[in-house]
Amino acid sequence: MSNFYIAYSVTNNSGIIYFRIGVAMSSKKASIIKQASMVLNTFTPQRRKPSPVYAIPEEDKHISGKTIVFTGGTDGMGRAAVSTLHKLGANLIILGRNEEKGMAVARELNAIDGGFAQFLSCDLASMESIRCCAERIIATHKRIDVLVNCAGAQVPKRTITADGLEKMWAINYIGPFLLTNLLLERLKTSAPSRIVNVSSETEALGHINFEDLQTKHGFDALKPYAQAKLALNAFTVELAEQLESSGVTVNALNPGFIRSNLLRDLKGIPGIFRLIMRIFASPPEVGADRIVRLAISSRYSSVTGTYTDEDKISEPNPEAKDTSIRTKLMQISDASTARWRASLSEACK
Image (cartoon, rainbow, N blue to C red; front, side, top):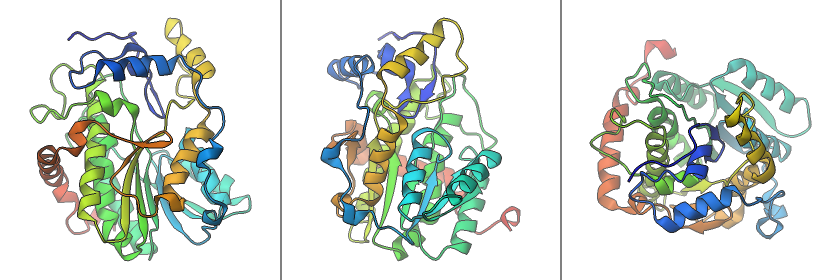
């Protein structure tokens, strides 16, 4: 099938704007109904406030002393989520690439009553940065109660990282995969604990192409993003099975169509996306509420290996539940990150 979309790509917190508008008809795996639903959803006013139906029970809001590692907490719904968790008393470890912005967020949070926030530099496009960050966390924190993999990125042009990985594959999947595995033993010893992987509606359009995981051919900004989010969902299912009876739960979340400031630099005709988002998308607080719910609500205390689509547990892309696909993906992922899962390097000391 040929591609069909308005020719400008930019990410919001839940996915790629033109994916929703343009349907991304190149995906043979996505059903026509799902594609139509995504487009319709883009032009349908989304929830303006968190749903009271799914409100976090009051008794679950006492999380003083809980240690939560959170990537992507300096902007948008991630920023709103860490604010909520801080107010509830969490000990936050916010990871991000922009040290100036991250330190500012930590200072703002610590200036108000609540828990304690610290920022650690962690570039998800750099496997060495991830390893060094994980080592610092393990060295200074005896517990990790929750890991939230919220950070993500979409780039319009194919870019290769210093590690030789396509950038969206690195940031949206391999980076979270490595970080999770490096912190996994600490999560196990802290059980009951949780891992929340923030995915995207676009995973439904994805296909894991083992012949071209780095998207060397036919790059259109759709394939690597959707493929990475699908891989994250597959990892969620696989890890949940591996951690059965360990006390560590793993779940994925599509937070919905969430308003973002990432469109502020668009000019001309593409700038119309700012208006579309302003009119139809949910505010960051709605996505944040969904993240916090998976992170602390007792309703998810014994739930694992699931994909929550906004407010309800749903079925992910069938590839995420395909055992043979998951097995092959884990083998490749393990091999891709093996050197950074070895002993601590001098660079991290």
